[in-house]
Amino acid sequence: MHILFSFFLLSLFFQQKEGAAGSADTTRTITGTVTDLLNSQPLPGVQIIVKNKRIQAVTDTSGRYVLRNVPSEPQMLTFTFIGYKATTIPVKKGQVVADVQLAPDIQTLNEVVVVDYGTSQKKDLTGAVASFVPGSPLYTRARFNTEDYSAINENRFHDARQQPVTTFSADVDRASYSNVRRFINAGNLPPKDAVRIEELINYFEYAYPQPTGNDPIAIHTELSESPWNKGLQLLRIGLQARTISAEKLPAANLVFLIDVSGSMQHENKLPLVQSALNLLVDQLRPQDRVAMVVYAGAAGLVLPSTPGSERQRIKEAINDLQAGGSTAGGAGIQLAYQTALESFQKEGNNRVILATDGDFNVGESSDAALQRLVEEKRKTGIYLSVLGFGMGNFKDNKLETLADKGNGNYAYIDNWQEAQKIFAKEFGGTIFTVAKDVKLQLEFNPAHVKAYRLIGYENRMLRNEDFKDDQKDAGEMGSGHTVTALYELIPAGVESPYLAKSDSLKYQKKEMATAHKDELLNLKIRYKHPQEEKSQLLEHPVSHRPQSWAKTSDDFRFTAAVAGFGLLLRDSEYKGGATFDQMAALAREALGPDTEGYRSELIRLIKAAKTLDNSGVARK
Image 1 (cartoon, rainbow, N blue to C red):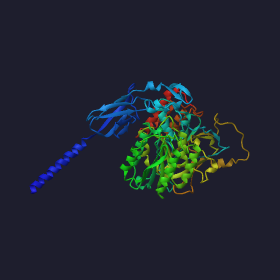
Image 2 (image 1 turned 180 degrees about the horizontal axis):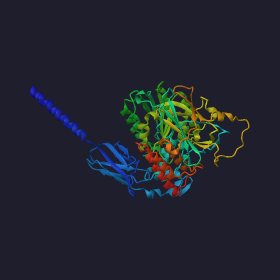
Image 3 (image 1 turned 180 degrees about the vertical axis):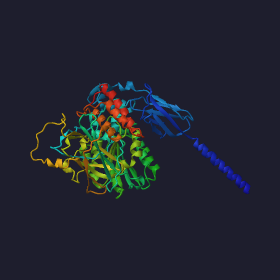
Image 4 (image 1 turned 120 degrees about the vertical axis):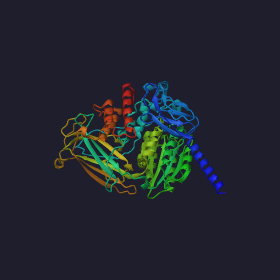
């Protein structure tokens, strides 16, 4: 009997071992490199999808990709990238390497496109034409380009004696950078008003010190020469929000508000939304909760508040969505806030996450009406974050306003790699606020500063009296977030054509400037803790200690390169002697570790923009 039992155990052991081995053989990892057919250069940002499977990847800066857990039987891989022909290839059973070359979609790029201001060839159109992606359904079906951007009137130089104080709101949004990338990858320079320089700068990570005291924000400053205007100086101000480990983050009460209208049916919209939200779901903890509201011709609740431990249930609800119908965005926002309020976490993070192209056309859809709605709802303590998708009818101005007024952040997701960055790598900062209504106020010392100009932040400027007004809304900073601002300075005694002549003031005190002769400026910051309505004040005098360019940090030089790139894209009157070659060289010299490849990608975009600029591509 004992012998028979032993044989039974041995038999069971070998069966389990064989089963485990067989299970391991059922999947594989496929790797490869994607290059340009014409020049064999690697293509970063190419999306690879295993047909009929929820398996996908994106190429890195070297054009490499990795597909994991691919079934071993024969599969079909589809490669898509803006400006190139979509390519589908077979992979045989057991094949683990698949290199691909993509051909530029030159014929489609040169086709005639009908836009709202006439009929033109692509080469004659403004940057908005990049909205039509070669090979996509949108390109062949859309007849009108209706993308909207708010006009940007660049900040000018202010005389430090006439107007020594400047005030603005913090901004951690990064949408403009990924949107600019989308235009350039499509072979067009972006419209000038699509380029918000502060969002280009804040897209990247910088090595600022973590806060050490009770305040959730640390301050860092650096001063050197301007690389594009000889004789002028560049001041960098960096804010670092405290990084909170995932296990210490408060419980999240999230409501996904998803646009499933007909305009969202294309592959770079709803399917990309689903991939992005699946990444977010992977970050959830058991104490977090998620509900889901969708809207098309009407709004509806498709998933009641569900604990983060039920990831599969949440993902199934996301993956079952289909697009069709008109867009009742206002009704969707109303229902999403109501759903969030029903599961409100008093000490937690309550947030609606809106995913849309911004094309609201049913019910409350005007900018003013939606803004009033969101301003009213934020009083409940529920934040609104906005994710923009797609092109052709993309409403950047509307989405930026909603996020701004809803105490949330705004991102534009142009590919799966960007979704990974936002929801996997930067999850804490994207979702969890550590300081709200963050405002900055600077008072310049005319003993050292003749005039100053804030680069970017045009739609974040505040009146000086707004600084102490706790009723005045400002920007939020999430866990680990950084905010970087650049000021270009005309030093005292330096003549510059940028500064208009003005009469001197009769009654202003001059002795104060000399009494604090070692100070360049006084920096004040106000912020509120997430659960409080009374602001806290930080004060940080900045010494006048300019460094030579060679002694500045990599982060300082890289920030300057990004800002210079933005000035060139905007064709700014303040770009001075900046060139694309110069900005690419500055960025290359300041790459640093660049483990994720984002800084290297910027250099590629600068080079591509130079080519487009030389080709005479027109922009609005």
